[in-house]
Amino acid sequence: MPPIPITPIGPRESGGPEIAAMFGVRYLESYDDVWEWGPDAVIICSENSLHRPLAEQAAARGAHVLSEKPLATSVEDAQAMVDACEQAGVTLMIAHPVRFSTAFLELKDAYDAGVVGTVKSVLGTNNGRLPMNVRKWFVDKELAGGGSITDHTVHVADLLDSLLGGVEATSVYAVSNKILHSDEVEVETGGLVSIEYANDVIATVDCSWSKPDSYPTWGGLTLQLVGSRGIADMDAFNARVDGHSETDKNGLWFPYGVDADQAMINEFLDAVASGKKPGPDGRSGLRTVSIVQAAYESVRTGQTVTL
Image (cartoon, rainbow, N blue to C red):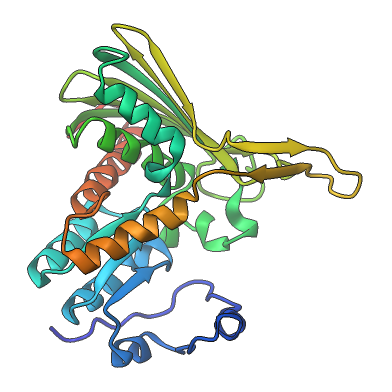
């Protein structure tokens, strides 16, 4: 399979040479240099719209892939990535670190043990600060695929994919607005997505860029399960010590406990070394992309979208 040309269409990364020097590793100037080097595995952290061609190039060269979320900006591209990696026999994993947080693992253990009984509904929130100060392309519809619905729905949908064992979503209804930051961006900054699953669970996801710039961290994620035997809650980023400072107007926030990002990387490396199926894998990522795209179709039409 010949290389797929990639034309830069957005802001380029910066600081790469400095970071490489810090860790004493070689810095490569282009994707062609990467493929010539011949990596066993790659982590794709590009703009969302470039995930597909980079994953296809990696798969064509036998390199395993850990892709940032969302897997792609369309169901077609997500499916193509899954197909390319499966046909090449390489691992495709999606970067959803909250799956590896202590809070979620404990919630999943309680769910699997039947503590809450039969789950009837789920309320998820994933709210953050406007991300344009970190990466401007996050608020570019072409590069990111959308706004807060793209950025935040996938995290909650992925946790539900793990919790429910990959049960398919059957319908999606969504609304959105850009009341917040309307003078700064063109994409939506707030959204509410309702998802019905094949096992009759109804989930609602509050996905927004609603945290103020003065918030001490990027945002947060919560999940509440309502079941026949009780209610279970989790706050993925509640393991912290926080306070105030005379010099830091944003306050202080010191997390502790399990490093979910490191646990996610370890899962990927173990999958590459052992050949086992990682979680979340490409097909899980495809299911979450399908939900996000159905949400945008629902926003566009004002109707419930059947999957």
